Length: 148
Image 1 (tube, one colour):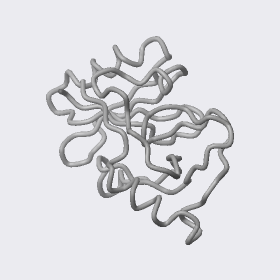
Image 2 (image 1 turned 180 degrees about the vertical axis):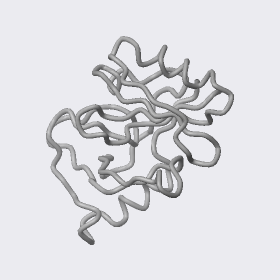
Image 3 (image 1 turned 90 degrees about the vertical axis):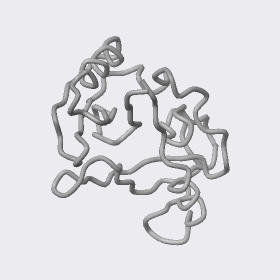
Image 4 (image 1 turned 60 degrees about the vertical axis):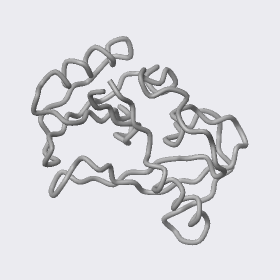
């Protein structure tokens, strides 16, 4: 599996626009916010940017926009892209599988202990190009997974 945080150009643009309009809010983050730039959780008081993001998979009627947090300052990105980020899969997750045309091919409600195995099962379908891992409580995009 290959893990995908938000694209660098999306994060850089959000940082550049932080605080300039109602779509790119600056926050003195509370601890534990899921950061889509590095796939970790925020520490209290870190400056964050909250903005709307539409994942690349999900086209036409399947396109969605949801709120995401990133560090306001540049960070190193994810530590690894070959294993699921522990900070992001410590709770139950919604998994959505998408094909190459951005259509939903299936989905699962995954208990924390089964996120990796269930993601692998969805990716075993040759028609699935990407699995999105999402928050169970808010439905927000956390990260994407593709075949390596």
